[in-house]
Image (cartoon, rainbow, N blue to C red; front, top):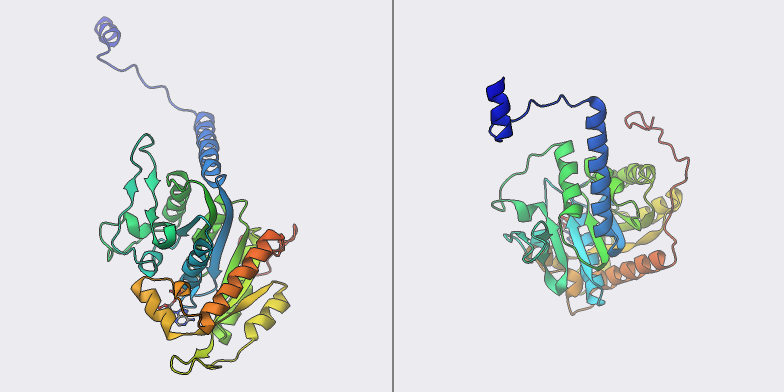
Length: 322
Ligand code: ADP
């Protein structure tokens, strides 16, 4: 005993650890949450407008809309960032010609912060793909880990002062939109992307209900791959039924933002890492896209996004709201 006391006094042995009570643990967790909320607010407080891009299913052009929305706003002289929140299938770096880039720690005083990668037109980009060892590495992450990473994208990424942050979510109604809604409390609205086919339209009402449940305002619906623009004569012909998304938007009480035709240039530019909206030629798809961006700008400026009702309830059998 006397020996131990001597050792303790000399700093050689640690005093026996006191058991941590449940209350202490809860208090520590609460303190951590408050600190995180403050850190998120510090980041998001420097961003004027936050727009989320969502789709009911994959392959409808959601990432194409997100990257081109960012590019169109940047071309107007706005300071823009884009967050690729699709943790398991990040596509934004490829669409902006940033494949293979890695995120670096900010040089200088604040070494805790990651710097977003600089994209075309000065767009600041952050994606899971910048944190991987190689671009073809698969990401097998489950719910809580994904939610934790999304939080890090707000706490430890130095976005700086931005006019717009565009957030590209993975398709469907999974964990990521839940975390975004939790962290980005003052989101200015969600853009929902669909195609004219019935299968895609079926998913819209699910996406709309989900968005309303998350209490996020909806900016409106975009119908992508709507008709086909011939690369030779420039004429547009309707391949699938046209106008069904506009009808659906009316029925769901949300804005219809516009329709983008199928245009082979969109695929080519997407694959080569160049936003199609930056093309010099005013093709029908470029014109359509610019009109959509103008409409989004007006809806935000005039606070016209469809707001969720306070007592909005879901009638499905799957979600926790039921
Ligand atoms: P999602 O994000 O919904 O999975 P993407 O934006 O990755 O969809 O688009 C899927 C593919 O379709 C990409 O190769 C993209 O270039 C192409 N694409 C998207 N919209 C159009 C369009 N209007 N015309 C032609 N190709 C398009």
